[in-house]
Length: 450
Image (cartoon, rainbow, N blue to C red; front, side, top):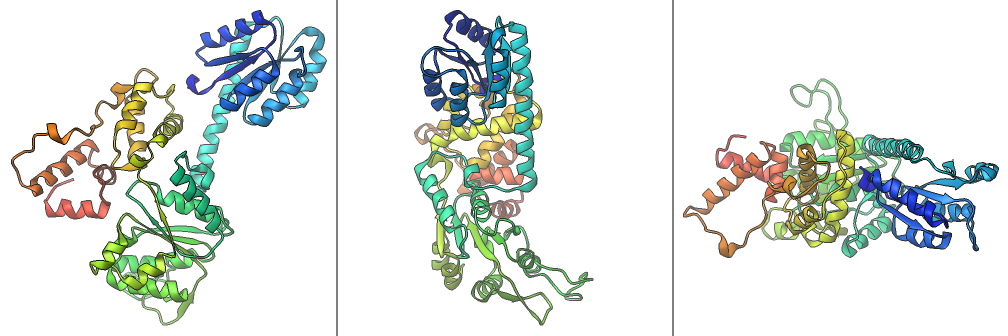
């Protein structure tokens, strides 16, 4: 992924600076050059360099060691390689004690430099992959792991820090695929409950009786197959946080049970007579407008107000298009590393295409699209043709509406989405901008086979 490894060469000798810059560019790396330390620091403020080559002896107020130390302060992840003459090898070794990664001796050998760079980047790539794997294993996400430069989302992330250590109930509202669980994790892992359990329950994935057992647990003999006592998710989350995902799909009976838990932090296991008390922070998430659900009589008003102590609305991706290039590059780097494919970034025309798309499935859809493009990419750079299958929104004025009922239009849209997503209901629902449970209902209604 050479496009993602920019280099900096700092040397007051024009010939040396130009030669090394040319050698590195021939190897495919983007390279900047500076003739003194101050110029190098200005460049480093705007570019995240992977490797900086710094001449040890430079005239003026800032020598190589001072330049290296300032570069490491601005870019702690950058590797600094000291360039030195034979007479100053001892000083170069001293520079390594101060934090330099390596040193090379003039006159420099292009092949030696290529091998050195390849070795350092291989190590950096392994470190990056290990960090991704560790994060996947621990599933710990804090606010700094959420990629955005959107002012609204930055305000939301600031709010998550303010409320992280409170026990107040939080309601996260947003369309499917916007990252509601990620925000919930940011709240939990940024607060004083970070070392305690974080438990997620999808309220739409289970029937009422199964969800009741899942949440509250059950006693031995409570029902056929209950061979032993089992703790529910609330008990498992004791001392930590429970995320009730898709809370708008909970049945009226369970709404009443949840209201009691919110009020008293106590409940009964299914088939039990003894109250269980827990210390748990409750975060709820939904893609529905619960205030509207209350008006229609489908959601308890008292439960809504108990849940809605702190409301966090997550903007859809189409309302923060400035994040699309950041997210796309992030997904491309992470997924290509996981799949073992060498992808050198995303072309400008491809990024314009991604920015123009409305993303009904939001960030989750963007991640899926990037993964598919990487799997089918053949030239090492994600370009327009790698996203040619992505359905771009057309003008309604130029769209010829078929002479069929609305139900038939919806049925065709569902079939088309399932075909595009190879029968994956989760991805199809995200692409259609509806909840999975809603899509399951429609599949049953229209008698569509998966």
